[in-house]
Amino acid sequence: MAESQRRRGRTKADLIDRVYERHGGVTKSEAAKIVDTIFSTVKTALGEGRPVRIKNFGVFDIRSRPGRKGVNPATGEEIMIRPSRGLAFRPARLLKNLVAPVTEEKR
Image (cartoon, rainbow, N blue to C red; front, side):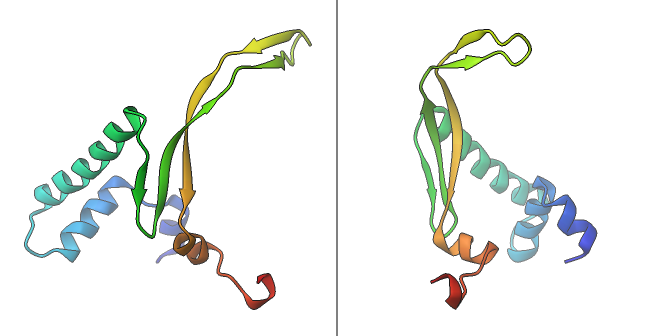
């Protein structure tokens, strides 16, 4: 992988190209539909508050954060921060080890 590509990361177009290259029986537009369907399915599930588990990759989940007290840094005034929901990703062990391999010293 070229250094410039490593820094910019992967794009949706890169994923479409990869599906197209790996599965010779599909056209590029069919590959795009496959990738769009996967993303749409993940977005729909998360929008409904359901986790998305992808084996050997990880889990996307919605986490609720309770309301809490905070401080306005500009004025020092105490404020109440409303409860909110946020997206969380918990990588699978296989993915963690790929990014930061486990060495004998770490065990």
